Length: 405
Image (cartoon, rainbow, N blue to C red; front, side):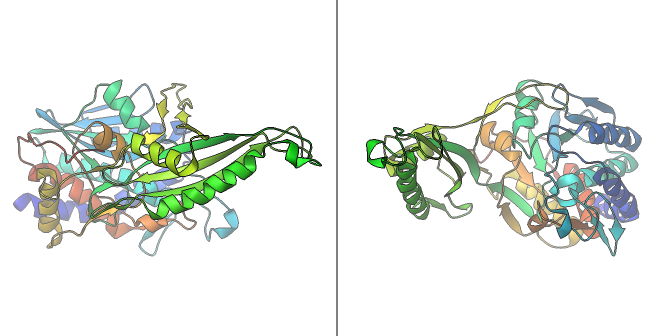
């Protein structure tokens, strides 16, 4: 395919510009709920890149479109980041955006402004190649993912009625091709006790003791959870315990623990809750918390903190197109894998059954870590992949997703 050689050449020629784009947006801090300034800068960069249509939706997501095909391919990057953590652990200032020795350095380079910069690089390439294929290309720069993965895409699908046929998630994969990951949910367990004076504990019921016994059962439950041959094992972990009492000289009358539950294939919200009830006893009250924080635009769009598992088959046409793009660009079939963490795929494919794959610059191990950095080579490869993929996709695709739990 001659277009592959041309795209590869253009990605190489635009490598430094893509790196500068990433450096630019890394220098703009963008914690979840505070993305306004970086969205404004990305909107300007998208207009300069030559997108046909650029807009910001009601939640604050940036949507940039190219082409007018009958079918829609979405390519997504979330542009919010986690905080810096302990500054003494950073060799360079976390928002430096420093380009040095073939790397771009700083918070968000890998997770995941690198994907956003590569998307803009791909848009420049598509303009240069005069793309006019059967796929309408929608590049989304989404918000609040670090706080509540998938919320941005629930909003796009349910409120903005943007329902693509296919999607690419540009979270870091080390330029491997990913086809799913475990789901997750948050669970709070509450035990009630009866307060009494600390000098006579036998007069009360200590809620901490009840919770403590349950925590040991949760540990045992983790060892017994289901395993999927591709996605791996489900897990459950206690991540917080808090109690309340009238004073430090009183028996606690309430104790809460917070669970991080990772869901493998075949595990659901209902099955996970039932397992915790069975392990901890029916006395515990289980709650799946809600996320209800306003976006930087002041918009509230709430959801329960349950994020479904997803994967698609290795033989799905989208996977095959991704493999073909890698072969044409890089001379070899890509390694197929999955993320350890969670992405916007929980909403795109897990909940709404839109087939999705992952291909992103940067290594997952750098996400949320001090001294986050991304190689320029990955930015070049990702830009080329996003630009070539629409040329590799069949014009008509009636295949369903591999499904979401």
